[in-house]
Length: 305
Image (tube, rainbow, N blue to C red):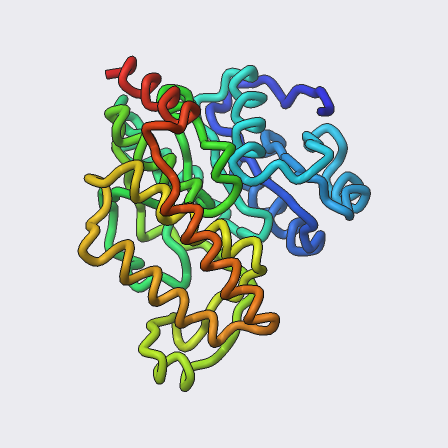
């Protein structure tokens, strides 16, 4: 890993962006919007991108922490948090490589009454594809990571992200432990940002025939690897926190819905179905009581309480 220091000043907030083979032009737009919020206090953690040279040329080596290989979103976020923690930042704004935030996102979050409360762990923005925008500030059980302003103490006291989950449901797993550690999660639905979720497919008619709900007929396609982790981690997170989710409309319904959604995906659909079934199988085999990493994180949470 490359060593460097961000600017040391009175700023409380730094931004953390995880990259993996990003569209560099879109990343530049991301950085431009991010810089308007936090100045030069941003860190890019790269997960072994093939176009690393382009990234370095675009943003500068001093802003990049190179992991050399794909460690997964959770490990990359943890590496970034550890580095920023040494720089004495109180809050970290998590962003995906394709997220573009409003130029005043951080200042508006800092102006919220919840920002100054000791038990606020996460403040999140809303997204332009959500139906609940412009409803003010609401308390949430879970929010996705991108666009979330996370208190560094909340990250530390909840055990951080779980590296073993690798990618999907890392944020919901983290949210559950943040709440268990005694913190609260808020979403300001008046702050709306752009966010891409996977490779989108427009299939309104087929989606309707399969009884699938989507934003104006758009569906997110993913690789077999992503599909595997989605199903596996979906079950794992539900098993870890049975009181956190409503099982009556959770595990079974979403699993079946996602399986139907694969009929809309681009080929190879067969590999994607196999990945889903393997993820379900591995998820069913998971026992949180035998997961030493998870048990260690929960001990850390219980120590806080």
